[in-house]
Length: 277
Image 1: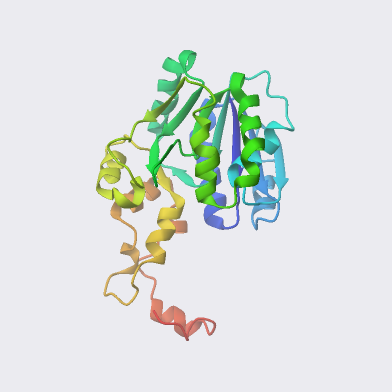
Image 2 (image 1 turned 90 degrees about the horizontal axis):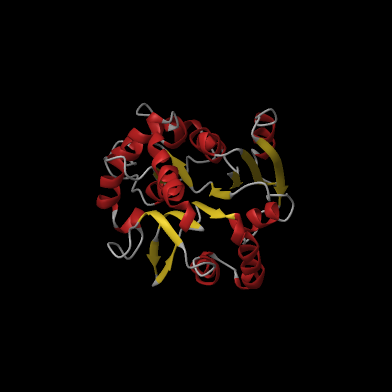
């Protein structure tokens, strides 16, 4: 397996989750290629940290654009010889792997790989579009050139996340009739797993069935939290998130420490003391 990791290390959170995900996945790939945004704040730091990593065969730096992860993956596939590998693992930095039981994803693929050329972590349906999310999936190299051709055919249509799903993600499963996913969510759910079906998601997460957190959902909790409520800031994230982040030693980067005092912080920082809570 050749792993292609598309990332945008614009913050310490993105930087550390990238290292975290490599740690969880490194048992399952032979070689790794990083494709990072050249303008990302922590691009150079990640590159320097991985310079002696034995499985890293290329570190590409390109400009981030509307083609996001797939633009980076296609760039890598167009600039390396992947012919000696049987499978390509695609991963981006929109997820945080939090459980070593991610091995189940790879174990199941090993059992069915002879009959499946596309294998995703899960399926989803949003806005009546059925697709495999791009955060973690495997592809047999026999269809990689068709994959690249599809991207080139529709890339001019991709201007935002909706058109990205509409013109590209939903069509990946048309590349070959043999495709599958590790966790089949459809038709049980027909909208966002992480927002619209949180109770079900937490059940999967806490029972070691689902092994991923979504980075943007963590941001979602902070963005829509009412800081005027009499609720400790350390409780903004659901306890399931906090416990899993603790296990990965990522809690300091995503959670507010219980000792943090918002009023004191505002008093000590002139740039924010005029803002509402």
